[in-house]
Length: 271
Image 1 (cartoon, one colour):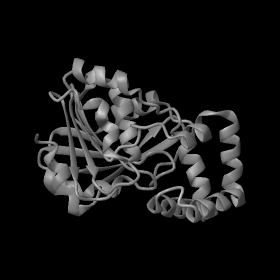
Image 2: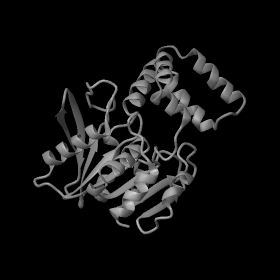
Image 3: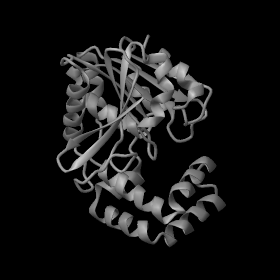
């Protein structure tokens, strides 16, 4: 594994390189994770691919100094800058892998630069469903102000979580995740910064579906059968295109980016 940095405007973008192959594979991690999470794929993909895993803003070692705003176009420029730095010659196409939050990033890239993408693998991807709480807290002025205030004082939110547990208004796994990220004031502030910074990534699924077909992009979805956060049914809009798209479900939960599932993920690059 190689750890590298590349400058972008006033920021320093960190990324990791795995493998010695010639095909560029850009990987995007889940919320609260970082580029090191893709090390598990090196044995299976490293001979054919050069795996380029990027730390998104306010994650890992990336130092983001552009305010709470990452535009999809910024990320495209970062990808091209890294590609030019890593590869000796410009490649015509790239391949993408996105896990959880990183899946929403990949969906947005499929919408923005479909002609540059040969294959996209989406592992338990966010972005297939509009979460009303996420939309309210990141896409509206009032919601974002409330979100910021809650990051510093979350008393009312703890009351809501307790009510949710008492009256079984949400699945226990979701309540557990909420407590994990909201109980600690530092984690709440990170949540506010990360969600707000990524708010411009709003993939339009009908448009993406059209671009996948037009550009003959190979797309593979992988879901965990027992995942209560990202449901496989949300990929239904893409199932009609069985020439380019396949949906796979395995006996697992949401945390699919780990060594024991690396083989399942690797197979998606050879189908």
